[in-house]
Length: 307
Image (tube, rainbow, N blue to C red; front, side, top):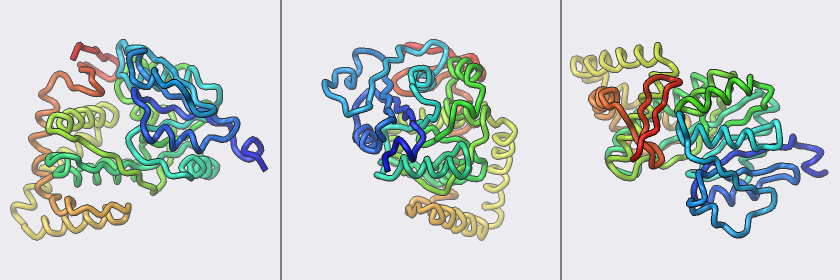
């Protein structure tokens, strides 16, 4: 029986400026009615010069963002160009196994809009130190809060008010942060390993962006998390056994998601580092993402600056 009869036709949106292994991996999973949209910025991007594309793969030129992030601009352009109502968002920086798209469709049949989970793996010393923070906030936080992760999320246009969503998307930074405000997403305990950092500056800029996204889209939880962080660190100083318990707990959480990293033994130093880094994140007026500098004044007030 063909995919035409067994699977809803799907448009997969993958923003990237270069053709990566992820593009090949996703293209190989397309059914005869599916499509993969490779969304890039402009004609100067390396991917735009690719001569041959796999079947059912299209290049979409989004142009430079105005008043939003490059990622938000790309997703908006991709949704407008997509032929199908079933949509999958993904990224170019992690491995997509052969059953990736099939699993997402199975998830949607059971749960409706569904997201997988990220596990961020540090590529430089600071990023490795911060891995426990991202296990707790990025992996566990996404799972327990049913937050959308733009690296692997599936939904239908009918699951949200698309006109309003696209309008707001072109005025903000976080595509998945906004998606979570427009539709209920169920997270499944399936983790994709995503490289993080590579240099001190890259790690700092990512950490600033993540802090700002968290505070913008979930301000009450962000404030509570800051208070709890300070309280936990004070507790670790007063009661050293708490530091041991916290480290073991974080390592156990990591193992439960299939994340077995020695860096999780650095849980307390990571939490300690998160305090000054958090202060630094909100002391900064701007941050860099994907080669562009942004001044994020408020949720729907974004200024794109020359980097």
